[in-house]
Image (cartoon, rainbow, N blue to C red; front, top):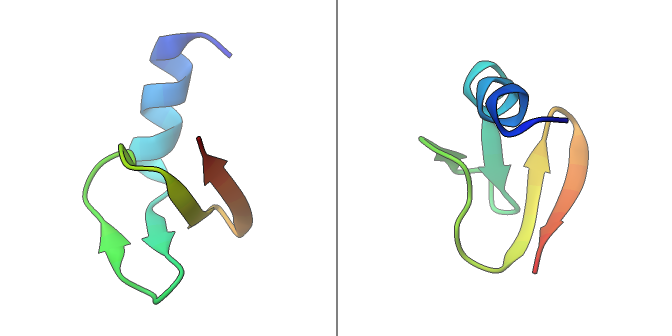
Amino acid sequence: MKCQEKCRFFVFHPTYTLDGRKLNDKPTTKGIYIHNGNKVVIK
């Protein structure tokens, strides 16, 4: 995926923390997130 496609993907599909809080933008800190029903690991 190109950067533009990734940015658009994160805008239309919200990202949540494991405790259920919705993030306004892409996650920038290390951790595990839920995005589009999938677990995402940010290293």
